[in-house]
Amino acid sequence: MESTETLDLTMFKLKQGTSSDTSVKTLARYYQDGIINLRPSYQRNEVINRKKASGLIESAILGIPLPPLYLFKDNDGKLEVIDGQQRLITFLGFLGRLTDMKTKLNGFSLTGLTILKNLNGKSFENDHFKFSLNEKILDFTIKTFTFEEEKGFEPTLKYEIFERLNKNPFPIKPNSFELWNCIYLSDFTRMIKEIAKTDDFNYGISRRSPDSLDLRMDNENDILRYMTLLGNYDKLKDRNDLPKSMMLLEVESHFLHKTPLSDIDLIKKDFLKILRKTRLLFGTSNVIGQLVNDKALRKTVYPNLTLMDVLLVTISDEDEKFIMKYRDELLKIITDFFKEEDNRAIIQNSKRGNARITNPYSDRVEYLKSKTFDIIRERYGVQKSKRINIRDLSLVDKLMEKQNGICPYCKNQIKPNDKYEIDHIQSVDDFGSNDELNLALLHEICNREKSNKKIIME
Ligand SMILES: [Zn+2]
Image (cartoon, rainbow, N blue to C red; front, side):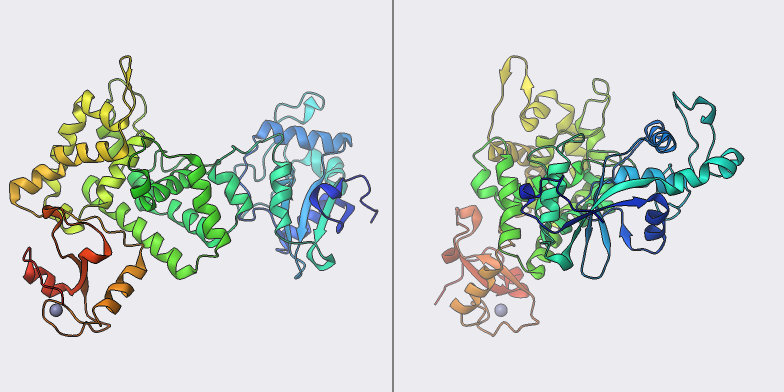
């Protein structure tokens, strides 16, 4: 081991890096023994094509040094690749050691070589390699910087290093989930990544094909956007777009305040519920995309982002049972709605002719609702839905306290296992507000029985 004088460690506020030359053989052993984690959670899953990978192998055979690997070593002796994923995948793939990873590079044969042309088409298992080149590859060394927790390296600094190293040559998009994921590793970002894996997201509202590789975390970025919008709709409804700075604030606040897992689970549940309703209504396989885009004019069937904003805000407000009951008619009326180019333009808030339409979210949501859901409601005399932010858990507690735990309709106690609902004292149809003063907690049965009658609060 030599010192690390050549690396500007002050930049990272570090002194605990060690440098060594590590052979491909050793790295392969680390991987086989499960000591090295190639893809820690803050890493993007990078792809490297076969031609580029072949070039790296060619360099190794020619003895040309490769850029260093950056590793983090935790107190248990486990290693994480901060930078150098592509180089490691190339070597391990060429040796055929990546049997547990979804990659086409496992056991690849060389292609596109310009100097060692006679090796094109050859693989590690090929006789040519077995007799002359195997050892050359296995003994090839890569400069390795290791930051060790045991020597006082602060683990969170690995995200900073990762971010800096990734500015080149594969820059991460600024103001993106991808970047924030590197810096703010938290239960909140983890939860978003879990949602991105669900079928309801991938086959329901994702703007990508379900099978495509999402290397830049575009899906997660969309989910974060919808969550930010839905969670702050009252503040954002007068705007016509969502500022990205708000998405950053959303991530930061959960990270800084260490939002408890139980609250994060509620946010997740809330969002999954909206996804479920969307799928109840539209079914699977990107019906939304086909429905809202004019197929004759557009190649893509994946929907426009601000259109999805409006659609999700609208659906978030709708009752699951209502959607289920009138599903066919709702789908028909929404399909007809989007057949009109004018309607599409208004909802998408996109350019139409020379005039740029910049309606606020609330106008677009109300417009869509009035031409679709409300029409079905009027047709069947169904009551209007009420917007209550279910994320505000403290609301239930506050109401319980105010009412001394008594249901104002039947005057009996609301017991912990009783089903309850939040009721508007002055109904929404009568312009009753969502203010705490206008809300009461009732037994579910009592609320249904009461219907629209006004209750007297004591
Ligand atoms: Zn009651």
